[in-house]
Length: 231
Image (tube, rainbow, N blue to C red; front, side):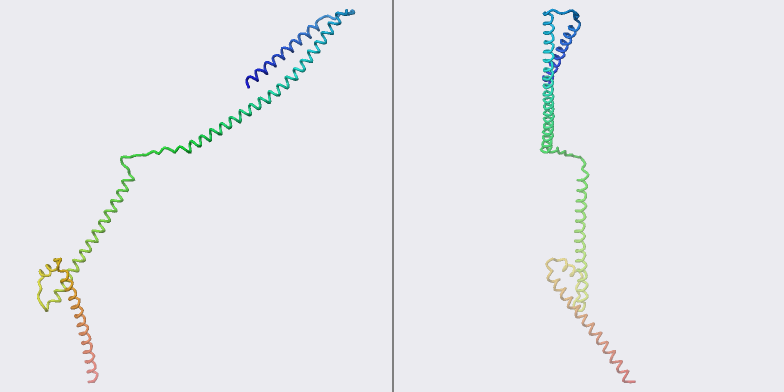
Protein backbone atom coordinates (compact mmCIF):
# COMPACT_ATOMS: atom_id res chain seq x y z
CA UNK A 1 0.00 0.00 0.00
CA UNK A 2 2.93 2.39 0.69
CA UNK A 3 4.34 1.65 -2.78
CA UNK A 4 1.02 2.57 -4.42
CA UNK A 5 0.87 5.82 -2.45
CA UNK A 6 4.42 6.68 -3.57
CA UNK A 7 3.45 6.08 -7.21
CA UNK A 8 0.40 8.33 -6.79
CA UNK A 9 2.55 11.10 -5.27
CA UNK A 10 5.06 10.84 -8.13
CA UNK A 11 2.26 11.15 -10.71
CA UNK A 12 0.85 14.21 -8.93
CA UNK A 13 4.31 15.78 -8.81
CA UNK A 14 4.77 15.20 -12.56
CA UNK A 15 1.40 16.84 -13.26
CA UNK A 16 2.41 19.86 -11.20
CA UNK A 17 5.70 20.10 -13.15
CA UNK A 18 3.88 19.96 -16.51
CA UNK A 19 1.41 22.62 -15.37
CA UNK A 20 4.29 24.87 -14.36
CA UNK A 21 5.96 24.39 -17.77
CA UNK A 22 2.67 25.14 -19.53
CA UNK A 23 2.15 28.29 -17.49
CA UNK A 24 5.72 29.39 -18.26
CA UNK A 25 5.19 28.89 -22.04
CA UNK A 26 1.92 30.83 -22.02
CA UNK A 27 3.52 33.66 -20.01
CA UNK A 28 6.42 33.92 -22.46
CA UNK A 29 4.02 34.13 -25.42
CA UNK A 30 1.97 36.78 -23.70
CA UNK A 31 5.04 38.91 -22.93
CA UNK A 32 6.19 39.05 -26.62
CA UNK A 33 5.08 42.30 -28.45
CA UNK A 34 2.54 41.86 -31.23
CA UNK A 35 3.42 43.91 -34.32
CA UNK A 36 0.68 46.21 -35.69
CA UNK A 37 2.05 45.88 -39.14
CA UNK A 38 1.36 42.99 -41.44
CA UNK A 39 3.50 39.96 -40.37
CA UNK A 40 5.54 37.95 -42.72
CA UNK A 41 4.55 34.44 -43.79
CA UNK A 42 7.27 32.92 -41.55
CA UNK A 43 5.97 34.69 -38.43
CA UNK A 44 2.45 33.48 -39.21
CA UNK A 45 3.61 29.92 -39.49
CA UNK A 46 5.45 30.26 -36.15
CA UNK A 47 2.41 31.53 -34.28
CA UNK A 48 0.24 28.84 -35.83
CA UNK A 49 2.68 26.14 -34.81
CA UNK A 50 2.91 27.55 -31.30
CA UNK A 51 -0.89 27.70 -31.01
CA UNK A 52 -1.17 24.17 -32.32
CA UNK A 53 1.49 22.93 -29.89
CA UNK A 54 -0.22 24.70 -27.03
CA UNK A 55 -3.54 23.08 -28.01
CA UNK A 56 -1.95 19.67 -28.24
CA UNK A 57 -0.27 20.24 -24.88
CA UNK A 58 -3.56 21.24 -23.30
CA UNK A 59 -5.33 18.24 -24.88
CA UNK A 60 -2.58 15.90 -23.66
CA UNK A 61 -2.76 17.43 -20.20
CA UNK A 62 -6.55 17.00 -20.18
CA UNK A 63 -6.27 13.36 -21.16
CA UNK A 64 -3.53 12.90 -18.59
CA UNK A 65 -5.68 14.48 -15.92
CA UNK A 66 -8.60 12.24 -16.89
CA UNK A 67 -6.38 9.18 -16.81
CA UNK A 68 -4.90 10.35 -13.54
CA UNK A 69 -8.40 10.74 -12.10
CA UNK A 70 -9.27 7.21 -13.21
CA UNK A 71 -6.03 5.93 -11.73
CA UNK A 72 -6.74 7.78 -8.47
CA UNK A 73 -10.24 6.25 -8.33
CA UNK A 74 -8.85 2.77 -8.99
CA UNK A 75 -6.13 3.33 -6.41
CA UNK A 76 -8.72 4.56 -3.89
CA UNK A 77 -10.83 1.45 -4.46
CA UNK A 78 -7.75 -0.74 -4.20
CA UNK A 79 -6.65 1.00 -1.02
CA UNK A 80 -10.16 0.56 0.44
CA UNK A 81 -10.14 -3.13 -0.49
CA UNK A 82 -6.70 -3.53 1.09
CA UNK A 83 -7.88 -1.80 4.27
CA UNK A 84 -11.01 -3.98 4.38
CA UNK A 85 -8.87 -7.08 3.85
CA UNK A 86 -6.50 -6.03 6.62
CA UNK A 87 -9.45 -5.33 8.95
CA UNK A 88 -11.04 -8.71 8.21
CA UNK A 89 -7.68 -10.43 8.68
CA UNK A 90 -7.21 -8.71 12.02
CA UNK A 91 -10.74 -9.69 13.08
CA UNK A 92 -10.12 -13.32 12.09
CA UNK A 93 -6.82 -13.28 13.95
CA UNK A 94 -8.52 -11.82 17.04
CA UNK A 95 -11.24 -14.50 16.86
CA UNK A 96 -8.62 -17.22 16.44
CA UNK A 97 -6.62 -15.90 19.39
CA UNK A 98 -9.76 -15.69 21.57
CA UNK A 99 -10.80 -19.24 20.59
CA UNK A 100 -7.29 -20.52 21.26
CA UNK A 101 -7.25 -18.80 24.66
CA UNK A 102 -10.61 -20.38 25.59
CA UNK A 103 -9.37 -23.83 24.57
CA UNK A 104 -6.19 -23.35 26.59
CA UNK A 105 -8.19 -22.26 29.63
CA UNK A 106 -10.51 -25.27 29.26
CA UNK A 107 -7.67 -27.76 28.93
CA UNK A 108 -5.61 -26.34 31.75
CA UNK A 109 -6.96 -27.25 35.17
CA UNK A 110 -6.42 -24.73 37.95
CA UNK A 111 -3.56 -25.64 40.26
CA UNK A 112 -4.67 -27.21 43.51
CA UNK A 113 -3.14 -25.59 46.53
CA UNK A 114 -2.78 -27.87 49.51
CA UNK A 115 -2.52 -26.18 52.85
CA UNK A 116 -0.88 -27.90 55.76
CA UNK A 117 -1.16 -26.65 59.28
CA UNK A 118 0.68 -27.78 62.38
CA UNK A 119 -2.52 -27.38 64.38
CA UNK A 120 -5.52 -28.45 62.32
CA UNK A 121 -8.51 -27.21 64.30
CA UNK A 122 -11.06 -29.14 62.27
CA UNK A 123 -9.21 -32.44 62.68
CA UNK A 124 -8.71 -31.87 66.40
CA UNK A 125 -12.41 -31.12 66.83
CA UNK A 126 -13.31 -34.34 65.00
CA UNK A 127 -10.95 -36.34 67.20
CA UNK A 128 -12.39 -34.68 70.31
CA UNK A 129 -15.94 -35.56 69.27
CA UNK A 130 -14.94 -39.17 68.57
CA UNK A 131 -13.16 -39.36 71.93
CA UNK A 132 -16.18 -38.00 73.80
CA UNK A 133 -18.46 -40.43 71.94
CA UNK A 134 -16.23 -43.39 72.85
CA UNK A 135 -16.07 -42.29 76.49
CA UNK A 136 -19.86 -41.95 76.64
CA UNK A 137 -20.29 -45.38 75.04
CA UNK A 138 -17.86 -46.95 77.51
CA UNK A 139 -19.64 -45.26 80.43
CA UNK A 140 -23.01 -46.50 79.18
CA UNK A 141 -21.77 -50.07 78.81
CA UNK A 142 -20.08 -49.93 82.22
CA UNK A 143 -23.22 -48.55 83.86
CA UNK A 144 -25.35 -51.24 82.24
CA UNK A 145 -22.96 -53.95 83.46
CA UNK A 146 -22.95 -52.42 86.94
CA UNK A 147 -26.75 -52.32 87.06
CA UNK A 148 -26.94 -55.89 85.82
CA UNK A 149 -24.50 -57.09 88.48
CA UNK A 150 -26.30 -55.06 91.14
CA UNK A 151 -29.63 -56.54 90.06
CA UNK A 152 -28.19 -60.04 90.16
CA UNK A 153 -26.77 -59.37 93.64
CA UNK A 154 -30.12 -58.03 94.80
CA UNK A 155 -31.94 -61.05 93.39
CA UNK A 156 -29.36 -63.33 95.01
CA UNK A 157 -29.87 -61.80 98.47
CA UNK A 158 -33.64 -61.78 98.01
CA UNK A 159 -33.58 -65.48 97.11
CA UNK A 160 -31.43 -66.22 100.16
CA UNK A 161 -33.94 -64.47 102.40
CA UNK A 162 -36.82 -66.39 100.85
CA UNK A 163 -34.93 -69.67 101.32
CA UNK A 164 -34.26 -68.86 104.99
CA UNK A 165 -37.93 -68.00 105.53
CA UNK A 166 -39.05 -71.22 103.80
CA UNK A 167 -36.71 -73.57 105.71
CA UNK A 168 -37.37 -72.26 109.20
CA UNK A 169 -39.69 -75.14 109.93
CA UNK A 170 -37.60 -77.82 108.26
CA UNK A 171 -34.00 -77.14 109.13
CA UNK A 172 -31.70 -74.44 110.30
CA UNK A 173 -29.38 -73.57 107.36
CA UNK A 174 -26.55 -71.23 108.07
CA UNK A 175 -25.87 -68.07 106.14
CA UNK A 176 -22.34 -69.29 105.42
CA UNK A 177 -23.75 -72.37 103.72
CA UNK A 178 -25.96 -70.22 101.50
CA UNK A 179 -23.06 -67.90 100.70
CA UNK A 180 -20.88 -70.81 99.63
CA UNK A 181 -23.76 -72.22 97.61
CA UNK A 182 -24.38 -68.97 95.70
CA UNK A 183 -20.69 -68.22 95.22
CA UNK A 184 -20.01 -71.59 93.58
CA UNK A 185 -20.46 -71.68 89.80
CA UNK A 186 -21.19 -75.42 89.80
CA UNK A 187 -24.27 -75.04 92.02
CA UNK A 188 -26.46 -73.34 89.42
CA UNK A 189 -28.74 -76.38 89.18
CA UNK A 190 -29.14 -76.46 92.96
CA UNK A 191 -29.99 -72.77 93.02
CA UNK A 192 -32.53 -73.27 90.24
CA UNK A 193 -34.14 -76.10 92.24
CA UNK A 194 -34.22 -73.97 95.40
CA UNK A 195 -35.84 -71.13 93.46
CA UNK A 196 -38.53 -73.54 92.22
CA UNK A 197 -39.12 -74.82 95.75
CA UNK A 198 -39.36 -71.29 97.14
CA UNK A 199 -41.90 -70.36 94.46
CA UNK A 200 -44.03 -73.42 95.32
CA UNK A 201 -43.73 -72.67 99.03
CA UNK A 202 -44.78 -69.05 98.59
CA UNK A 203 -47.68 -70.13 96.39
CA UNK A 204 -48.80 -72.60 99.07
CA UNK A 205 -48.55 -69.92 101.75
CA UNK A 206 -50.64 -67.60 99.61
CA UNK A 207 -53.32 -70.28 99.18
CA UNK A 208 -53.29 -70.98 102.91
CA UNK A 209 -53.78 -67.30 103.58
CA UNK A 210 -56.67 -67.17 101.13
CA UNK A 211 -58.27 -70.22 102.76
CA UNK A 212 -57.79 -68.68 106.18
CA UNK A 213 -59.51 -65.53 105.02
CA UNK A 214 -62.38 -67.53 103.57
CA UNK A 215 -62.64 -69.52 106.81
CA UNK A 216 -62.68 -66.35 108.84
CA UNK A 217 -65.35 -64.86 106.60
CA UNK A 218 -67.49 -67.99 106.92
CA UNK A 219 -67.07 -67.95 110.68
CA UNK A 220 -68.16 -64.35 110.84
CA UNK A 221 -71.18 -65.10 108.66
CA UNK A 222 -72.16 -68.06 110.88
CA UNK A 223 -71.84 -65.94 113.99
CA UNK A 224 -74.00 -63.26 112.44
CA UNK A 225 -76.68 -65.80 111.47
CA UNK A 226 -76.65 -67.31 114.96
CA UNK A 227 -77.22 -63.94 116.52
CA UNK A 228 -80.06 -63.22 114.17
CA UNK A 229 -81.72 -66.56 114.98
CA UNK A 230 -81.42 -65.97 118.71
CA UNK A 231 -83.24 -62.70 118.43
